[in-house]
Length: 358
Image (cartoon, rainbow, N blue to C red; front, side):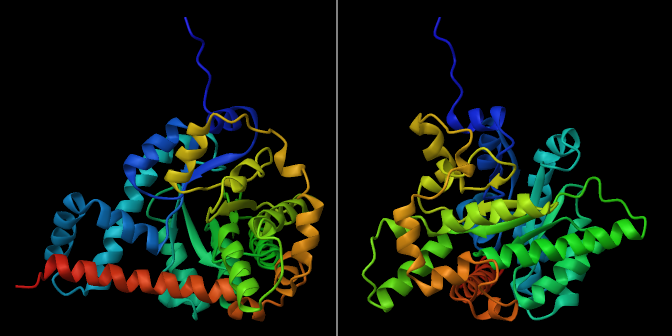
């Protein structure tokens, strides 16, 4: 009889504190992710739009029912209700894990409306509202100057936050500090924090994308292999700082572009959140995972090459940007624009479903 050997994802889940969250609320993908050892899921406007479009056989009738039940609603309200329904159903799949791990994992992320990105109170209000949709909801708020204020406020109100639109060590550190301030204020006021499970995302692949754009635009002579390590270097550095400073929030890794963004980051108390296709690619590879990869430094020749780029230094140095500079950082602008476009795309899709062209 052949002895069963679990895949690398499950090995990491079984032997380390590294958590796997699926970067989608698609129920089929999430079910398979749980079988790989997955203990959470994340979502954003682009992911939600893609899931609805992929499963129109399921979602088109449901969207028509939402519109029928709320005849005064516009396309945006109908679309966001579909996203909320999707999130609640995905959260139900994860609730047993949430209860078993007392809120540390088993969470489903839902993102605040990107159109509110200039209004801290509106973001915090929506975060609080979303957090009440299910006991294991975690809410995404962007790492912008406005978002930092909303993150502290929402955390104080008892919302478990997943920082998003975050690509750099300064963004990760400043938002973790905001979360900590909110938690400390709750403790000072006698409010519970035991089952709160905040995370701070670093979209490593989007940082890599930006560095490649800058290298091309500025005609830099740099080893292209080094550019695959920019996000990894920022994540490893941020993780080290989180451990040294004792932040309650964990680092969450998202926006995968290469398998190193999984294999080089295993072993620590952090969350790895690849899209399902990337998770399956890693799991099917049969590679032997390193249970202490997170503590191993980036190859020095790659780090030396990256350090020649001022834009990388801004992203790597915890004091490389002010909070106000987060708003104009290239990946921030590009990602917010992408999320806003996804909102528009969802509205158009809803319109085509409830008011098809004759």
